[in-house]
Length: 273
Image 1 (cartoon, rainbow, N blue to C red):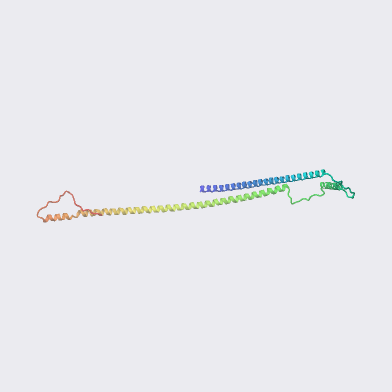
Image 2: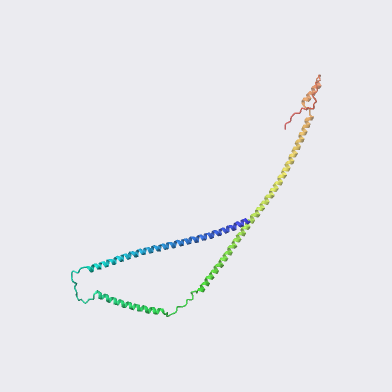
């Protein structure tokens, strides 16, 4: 029972260790994925920056070629020889230079007016003319910290309740396992006791049978010895046919024959059993 309980506790600890290892592995895989994503993002940003730099260089090269072409074209036009004198006519139309100066003056006036309006706007913005209403739904830093602490306490309480329920469930499982083990042990002990009783009864019966068999063998042996002795006595007491014939001839014949040797030797027929 102690070994089973220790094995069960070891299994629970191994399962918890495996779960922790799996969580750490998941965290490591997630960190690796985030790192890979950041590397890909950085590489994409570098690639975009390189493409933008290439495009900028291309645009700068095209602009340089354009301005070079424009400068060369102007130089060629300036160096061109005039074959005829220009016609000067007083048409009353303003020249391009005059129109350009007029346009520049208008643009300068517009820019001045825009700058003045912008400065006036800056002055008006620097001095607020109203106060923002207080939003009661927003929480202060202290309230936010209190809410976070309350949520943390609630989570800790829930975790404590969950841990208590888990420990209770583990204890109940251990008790059920202990009860099953004790029931199996009791069944095993009862079965062993019943087997021992049956074995003792069988041994007693076997001893009784062996005693009866020994008695029966002794009786049969005694009976056999008695029968052999009785048979031997009958054989010893009954004369043989040879002796009867010898005695008969001895009586009838006139000639006296010598008696058989009386050296104590007796002729006995062999009896097979």
